[in-house]
Image (tube, rainbow, N blue to C red; front, side, top):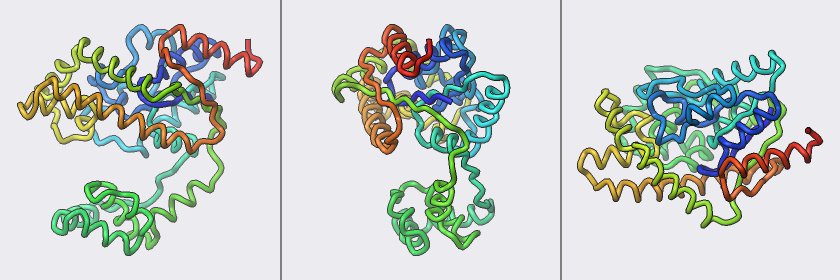
Length: 308
């Protein structure tokens, strides 16, 4: 398969569509927020025109109230990939959620056992002890994982201790075993980047302004009015969390927009840090991020591979 990834606002959607049209491919989204229905503007979901230009999968597959996991993504996306391959077509994975992409390519099984009652007990223990004390307790059994997780990351801290308790082994050890296995899918990976951090940040700011023009505030209000909880995972997404606070009167819309831009820039920085671990990927500068740039990059990429 081909993977098109990169930081937010890099132009991944346009390039994925151009490659799909050129190669008879089908796009499998790898965006942890585009999976949610009714969350279109703030997730930069492909437009109706873009969706019509090439077959798309893993978009609008969950309701905002659902707690969608990486394990569930791999299960669903791998079925899509296998079906695309079985029909003799090319899967093109497009998105910026690095954990989803890595887990899909590796074929992670997420086979560690679960126990809902134990998790509830550990969750209550976290609340009673506080995040830092609970993290220190995890450090006794899995110091590497505890060092990576902030005290406020209750969900992952509880899960890590749950796994230790059930298996007698650390999540660090189990993850190392998963990483040592050969990948499930062969892939050629393209990382869209920018010539400068300033150029990328300017594009992010323009995208946020466009989202507001398209009605992002109205989209957030609609979700809240429909009963979607402010505390659910989907509503913690960049853009939705900030505007929900503005709608509640905790801040102004202008301040919320500034916060969205700031959080988006920080997210892009984290994405780039994650992506730099991939020494085999092809990095391509794409400062324009528009359809003409996507066509040029697609043509150059195919020419390099001897594909007409």
